[in-house]
Length: 101
Image (cartoon, rainbow, N blue to C red; front, side):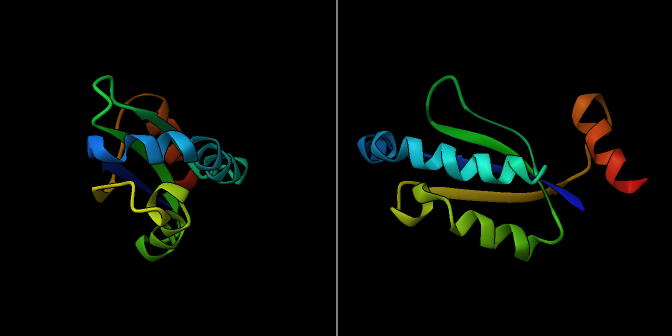
């Protein structure tokens, strides 16, 4: 599996929509986490967006997952940036290394 860093950029105008969907968004993340494909996720301190780190078989498979996010389905994400990433240090590197073994 490859590792992908995903950033969501948020517009303040959609904050109420995200707040309304937050529990559903967390359930969506929980399902991916239960499949051991979520390495980390969290909102930026200034609330301008989020960083999510996933494992996926391909960028197409990850795109399918991202389209299932209730935030995405409601149009509450202004920009989604997906990049394949190779973590070289730290806990995420260990998780990625386990996939390469």
